Image (cartoon, rainbow, N blue to C red; front, top):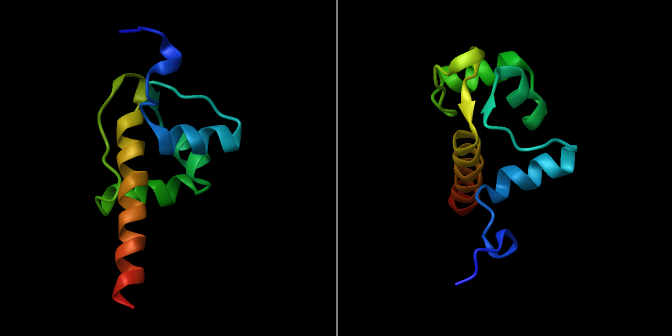
Length: 89
């Protein structure tokens, strides 16, 4: 078995693709303003997503609120909701 990092699958494919499109890099912890920049939304919109339980939020060091896995899960869930809405029509 090879331990070459190039053969490893991408851990957060949707998030990493979105970050690449915006010229941003993968981080360990994200703040509200980071999530707003990634999703092209306002901080208030991200706060509303958290209140509506659409986006999971954590109490992390240095005022961090999101991990990469949280943002990846949100992106996957958004795609599913959109697909379900199309099927319902």
